[in-house]
Length: 125
Image (cartoon, rainbow, N blue to C red):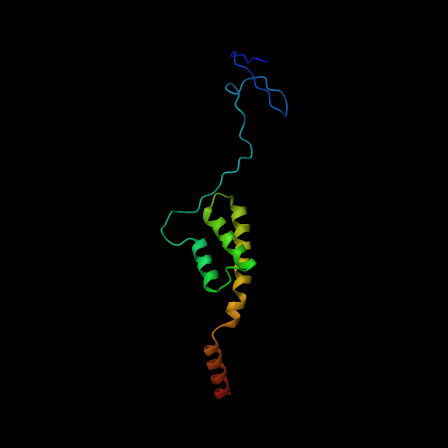
């Protein structure tokens, strides 16, 4: 077992070059450490997960793959603890999944409103 100049044992790494000093005398350098970002502020406002979940459930799409994907991505975003690029990619996927899940609902609309629009168009034109 190797000893440092200070007298402590040197614990050798499994990979890389052998250490000449102990961890106390020469600490391991922090390289490329990812610092997770937190969601800004802690407000009592509804989170993105709450809003997306409510929209998907009201549309009746909570059981569809796109609906589940949108809710999952929104919950991951609300949890935070990820890098900026990871959050941006997750937000992009959440928007795409929720858009796909809600597309049919937005196109269907209300039957009464649709009928009123057609009647008004027929009268004017």
